[in-house]
Image 1: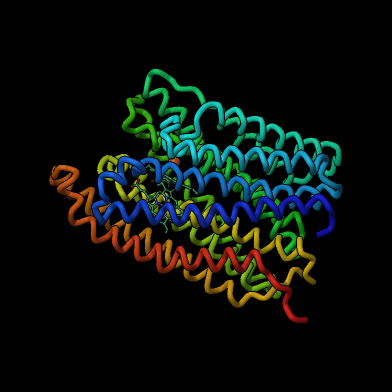
Image 2 (image 1 turned 90 degrees about the vertical axis):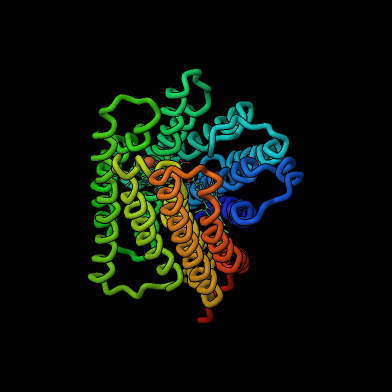
Length: 443
Ligand code: HEM
Ligand code: HEM
Ligand SMILES: [Fe+2]
């Protein structure tokens, strides 16, 4: 750690990790409801939709806290000056955590806006907007004052601004449901396939420069190409969500073609990282951080690129829309692209924040966490995918009613639960406790 104000990142990381644990627990409850019949009294008090809102909102909240912490870690080193208002960053964290707690408790009492993933009610949205403005001002003005612009800083600021502006579109309720869903997708799709990609690409570029000491221009050159492609395919690719909600027919073409191209930039990134690693004869240490980084790149491609491509063409999506196939893709893509990114950054930044020599730490226990969680989520996603293919066939080819088609699917939800409890939860507990108690490596 070179600058005092970087220390604020640590509080963001700790809270993000704790919320990650809670998110996994709520996921277990959801999968349980798919293979055992929960007594009606419990369902009345704690419905599936409430648990689902908690599971997904916790996910979004902890990932965003991770991105923010990572930004606070990066800004001083990139701009070569302290963050302008470190105290404001603390206030921002308190506001966001307060909103998170209020939202979770509110969900329990049915206080929700109802839109999946954006259930947070309107008054709390206002608090989030305030916190986002604090964040943008703090980060943006620090960059402007320092005047040491780099492509990495520019992309990060652009991504964060894009991310915040998009959130505004999900706040109003539009009376015409088709219009409402249009804008809902502006947030959901344009976040994960647009703004967030920009943010993690910039933060990854920063991490690579620091980890490898490779020349800045080598990494940043690719940032331009990839970002251009991401935005090009990602924005037009939003059309893959407009197929069946009452939008004009041309979206079938636009959405189909552009979203089918979306895996291309991700694939370029995989190749490029691989090529760099082969060419540069660097000692890839700490090894665990690199294991995370490689897994991040590979599972980003598998989850978003391959699992995304599998259902993005209109003639396939016609059958799979909104089934467990979607859930399989949702888990593997979020995990590969964003959960692994955050964990990589934590393993990169925490040893530096704690001042360990060369950022090296005792890695051993961390491998257990890594393999259990990654293989667990992979297994879980494959089980979701089998359930989804079964569901698609029984409901949409054979025309069976929803509840009848659920019967053979139960077994696969048991498999989901088993992976969840034995691997994902166990692994997450190991990762969280390892990261929170990191020890320096022996010299
Ligand atoms: C990291 C990037 C990505 C993430 C985190 C992600 C996540 C998700 C999530 C959570 C959903 C479900 C939304 C809902 O209905 O509640 C979804 C839907 C979808 N995703 Fe992605 N996705 C990503 C990239 C992609 C890519 C690159 C493609 C195409 C190649 C794609 C294709 C689709 C399609 C077609 C749907 C709609 C499924 C349906 O009709 O039910 N996704 N995505
Ligand atoms: C023990 C581990 C977990 C289990 C058992 C689990 C289970 C579930 C279940 C059953 C659902 C509801 C699907 C539906 O509505 O039919 C769900 C939704 C979701 N979970 Fe998990 N989950 C776990 C961990 C995670 C993790 C680590 C992530 C982040 C990568 C995640 C991301 C999501 C997302 C994005 C959705 C919404 C999916 C969609 O709309 O298609 N879950 N989860
Ligand atoms: Fe999408």
